[in-house]
Every structure is written in C-alpha cells, then in structure tokens.
Image 1 (spheres, rainbow, N blue to C red):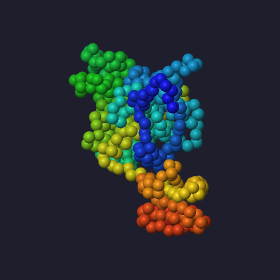
Image 2: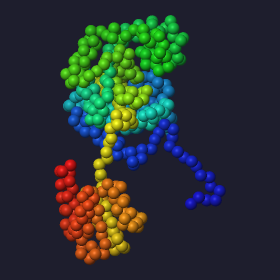
Image 3: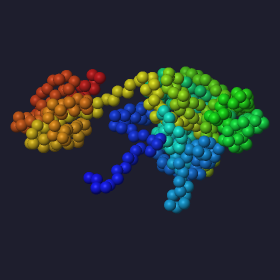
Image 4: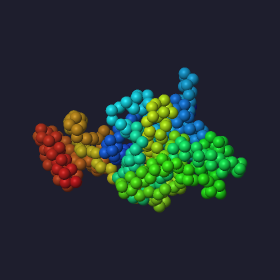
Length: 437
C-alpha cells in the first residue's frame, strides 16, 4: 500500500539489457542444452570464472588499442581502490584461470574448456547486440597442432548445424606468427602514414601501436587506401604459410566449406595464425552477419605469467544464435514438462490434492494444481495451456473409494485408479508414450 503523497518510480530495465521472460526461456534452455551436448561430444569441460576481474587482465590481453578496452568496458573502483572490470569477453579469464591454477601441469593436454555466461560491453544496442549479453566460448590450450584448429572450427559449425541452420558461411585467414606480423606492420605503416590525417582519430592512434587494427575500422572501411593496403598473406613466412595450409587441409578432410578473406583480422590483439568467423547468409538477418569468431592466441598464456602453452578458441553470442534460428524460420517447439495437473473438488478433496501433488513431485513426476479456487472447467483449460499429459480429479466420491479419476489429455480416455497404484500407473503410461514418440 502506497502512503499518501508517496512518489511512484517508473523503473525499467537498464538500456542495452533485457528481461528474458518465461515464455522465451524454454528456447534458451534448449539451445544451452544443445551446446552442452556438443561440448560433451568433443570432450570440452565447463569452467566458471568471476563476472568481474582486475582491469589489467583485459588491458594486457585484449589490448589497449582495441575498441573494447578504449570505449566499451564497464570499469569501477572497489572499496579497496582496486580497478575492476565486468568481463567483456571470456578468453582472458579462462587463460588467467589456466595459469593461476597451473592447469598446464594436468596429465591430459591440451586442456579443453568451455564457458557460457554474461559478458558486458558498453556499445550501441541493435538487433541481437546488447550491453549485457550471453556468450558461449571454448578454449583449447596446450597444443600447436593445426588439427585442433580444425576441431575448434568444427565444434562451432556443429552447434549451428545441430540448431538447424543451413545458411552459414565460414571465413578464415592467417594472421601469421610474430615475425610475419612485424614485417606486415612495417608495410602497413608505410602505406597509411602519408594519408593518416584523412582517417579517424582511432586509426591515427593505432598507426604506430597496431596498424593492423586500422583494417578493422568501421568508420573508414570505405577509404580507398583500405582496398590497396598490403595483404598479410604476402608477408607470411614459410612456417606460417605451411601452418595455414595444414588448417585448410584438415577443414577439407572434415568436408567443411570455407572462404579465405585476407582482410579478416578480428578485433583483439592476442590473435595470431588462424583467425575465423562464421556468418549467417540467411535473407533478412541484418547488417551484422557475424555469428561467431575466434582464432589462435599463441603467446597469451606467457603474457599472463604462464609457460609456453599455445591456444585457440572461439566465442558466439547466444542472442545472435537465436536470431539466426528465427531468420531461417526454424521453430523450437518446447516439449511438455508437466506430467499431471491435479484438481481437488471441495475442501476435503483440496487437502488431498495438496498432499498428492507433493507426493508426485517426490517421485520425480512433475505436477501442478490450482491455488485460486477456480471452477473445474477453468482448471481444465489451465491444464491444456500448460500442456499437461494427465489430469487427476479428486472429489468426494473418489475420496470415499480411495481412488482418483485419471484422464489422458492426448486420447481423452479416463479411468478410476486406486491411490495405491496411481504413481506406478502414471510412470508406466509415460514410459509407453515416450517409446511411441
């Protein structure tokens, strides 16, 4: 009750976030279970890291010239005057945990991890892109074998394919090793420097620190110099070129089609060698077609204080996966999760309904009942809406006979069942129904 003169507040969800209501969570749970099943098939184990980390983790790993670090991070001082940041991506946290807990000493290598949870970036909200978003990603740390690059890519593709997506495009590139990158960097500086004043301030700041990031600029992407910029492919040394050839060979063995895009650089500083993106080619999906992206990050473990342990991974947005499913008109039909709806007619029957509902739940049978004292016809409609498999009706006659009326909503048949055999009857009928389906 509001006090006289009290001011009401119109509090809404923060900009760039969303409430996922019960009518939608079934789709999320189905997608999440699909992802977990694929990770089980590939033997990737879940890791759960804090939602916030020390800010230095991201400035050192992601790179202080990236848009994420310069513009998008949610950073704050805690009461101990420490700088903390809500995680904008998952790789840095996973690698930090790998080093901190000495996972490089595990008997089984490489260490294969996956994570799924909220990430935070302060960016303009648009279709499928939020300031708080859910990201699934995997990391394979401890192997420099190009075969595991192909495995990582195949896992990402399998998630989308098992979600029913057919209009997919895989784009790959090689960013080369350190020596290749240094040679390419020198060529990029020479290419852009005479006309750098024509570019945005971000590009100007990146010229000497990380000119490769200029190629990823959204503001100046149509500048003529972008088209004529030196290609990294021309600067790959023999070792890097051979590695990329192996990755392509393994993808071909797996029958995974791909396109090579020499301008694909990804947005984070820790990438080297293999880089890739998976895009939706579905009509009407939107201007931002990228569904997932990733690549190899040899050297990141050492940067964060660990030994030489090369790694590769990817991340995908669950929101964009659901958008892609919708764009291809794939329906995720939520299966009925309610076994029994219990109806008690009269005060004594209601007491029995309360008791029986509890007993059913204790026996792993999902059950629901009415708590608004509605009429039987209204309760039956509620059972239909909840897609219950059975309805149990208890009245005075049933109480006297220590039985219930069990109605199968699929067939419309109903039978008087003794309370003593009710649970066995429901379990037997449900097993038969599942076998028929």
